[in-house]
Length: 235
Image (cartoon, rainbow, N blue to C red):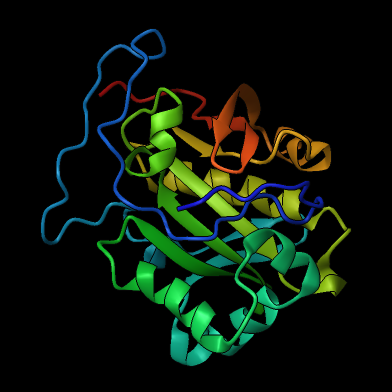
């Protein structure tokens, strides 16, 4: 996984050029919680993300929203078109032939489930692309005191007609709520926008995230944004 640089416009809250991969054992900060349980190796049959396909739809101020797992036979052409939008391409770095998009999706779909590529569907219309991933099992965990089951997000709003309306912030809040509701052992949702991207950081803040730190990642200095569970689970 690489961490793209550049200032991302408000609708593009986070992006990644490659799917998350296995990180080294994460570093834990015992000052942040009482008992640490480090995740062991993933076993056959494990679902690292607690089955996003079963999470269902939620009501938001802008309509009914749902994360729908990507199916290449149905969704590849749409995601490919979004990745070749000039604004998206500048930050996701996945512009090119359809095979480029397909390889990116397949790397996640054929993996062990630690990253889930999804469409964000609002009132029945796909409006963006999301990746929900296990941040504690990702190289990102080498750059901050990760907790077991930390869940990361990347997203883009696909069509220009859906941008510039504050949609990203509303949906970001909805997805963070959804993750914390459907993943009982996850105590927080994390993201790493470029710190120069002040509109994006502001969108995270308005969605209930806090700016926890600045971290140096390949290609950018990032603002580590964290959305905490209101009443953390003690493991």
